[in-house]
Image (cartoon, rainbow, N blue to C red):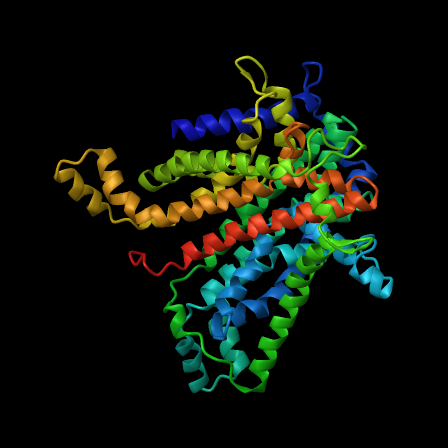
Amino acid sequence: MALPVAFFGVFFAWPVVSIVDRGLRPDGAWRFGRIGETLSRPDILDVLGFTVWQALASTGLTLLVALPGAYVFARFDFPGKSVLRAVVTVPFVLPTVLVGTAFLALVGRGGLTDELWGLRLDTSVWAILLAHVFFNYAVVVRTVGGLWSQLDPRQEEAARVLGASRWTAWRTVTLPALVPAVAAAALMVFLFTFTSFGVVQILGGDAYSTLEAEIYRQTARLLDLPTAAVLTLVQFVAVGAILAVHARTVRRRETALRLVAPERTARRPRGAGQWALLAGVLVSVALLVLLPLGVLVERSFAGPDGYGLRYYRALGSLDESGTFLVPPLEAIGNSLRYAVAATALAVLIGGLAAAVLTRRAGRLVRGFDALLMLPLGVSAVTVGFGFLITLDEPPLDLRASWILVPLAQALVGVPFVVRTMLPVLRAVDERLREAAAVLGASPWRAWREVDLPLVRRALLIAAGFAFAVSLGEFGATVFIARPDSPTLPVAVARLLGRPGELNYGQAMALSTILMVVCAVSLLLLERLRTDRTSGEF
């Protein structure tokens, strides 16, 4: 536990505590009255209300749109199913900045809906809600559909034989079994939208602001650390309470289920109703997932003189506005280097943490497990700004070092590594390790000869998740990325923040490149997931 605890203590707890300390204890005395003062301000109450409202609305809308898709992917077999499953998962690994950019190209000024019907949604909350559905569609399909595909349909058929209607059989047999998966999917969607930053920053502008966006505004623009500290505490407490309530309620509903292989439950659609449902899901995927990405690509090639590579060529040179100290194209290499370093750190720290959680038990380890999840519930903006004010003097003066960005990105990647590797590590038969020890193997050799071959594929999948997450991290990176070494999400945000047709076109082109890089990472990850040669799982 030593290395993971030290890593989180220095690069997570210290920056966050420092921000809160500077905000609530500016002159050496705690001023807790600022909490009440801040939370009683009308503008802050509006932000809190909108944050909760849009998270609830986004979660409900996502479940409404995605649950039919989860059923189709779970129960139907049709040509191109595996490819389509990978396609609907692409948005989830895309940076939120890119998601906002895609919807800006679709429903914003000069976007497709603006050109065809004169309709702009970037000035309304609907753009934010639709972007959140686009981003989280795969969460519901993967989480709920994964369990649904393994539920034995004969249990529902038995209820039908005993006289239950189709609706009654589904409501009394299938629905209770799906409740934990639906609750888990709803929790993840709510958390992602509750802490939404990139999407709101681009589509909401000054009209709409979530807690995360308001923390950024208070720190970066207004330099109001007391307000930022209070909002950070509010977000942390809210996310912690949500996780605790979810863990308590879902644990009560979990029951032993009769599961079968997914191949035994999927079949071709039967009847007009099932074919209509499949067609409806395909149309919704085309409109909600493919259309925004397609418009983004189209805008990257569409110039004032027709289609061409004008915006892509412009990425290789500096403009006269001084937006960048280096050509925007260099952001590609920067992002890849940062992501590789962050992935190595996340795999090292997350792998050690997963090993600890596998071998030990007790309150100390349960607290350690909770510590690993904290970066997902604390503002990335707070962490990034905290890096600037804590890691600025010996022995850890890292403000001028390139490693600062991978360190912040690794904090977000570690939870994904732990959650990917932990189930596989727990499934390793302890008797195999004991047999290796009896035969004279050292603990290191036993791990290398027993554990590693069994968890190698999970390790590669974890590395893929960490790489994709690191590639798209924006909240912390926007603070600590040096002007001469921007990442792709930071470069896109800078281009969108400046007026002019050339800046907009370059943002579309750079977003397209970022989308391709993320999609390639996902396809490689999908290939690892569906590799039939690894039969030990």
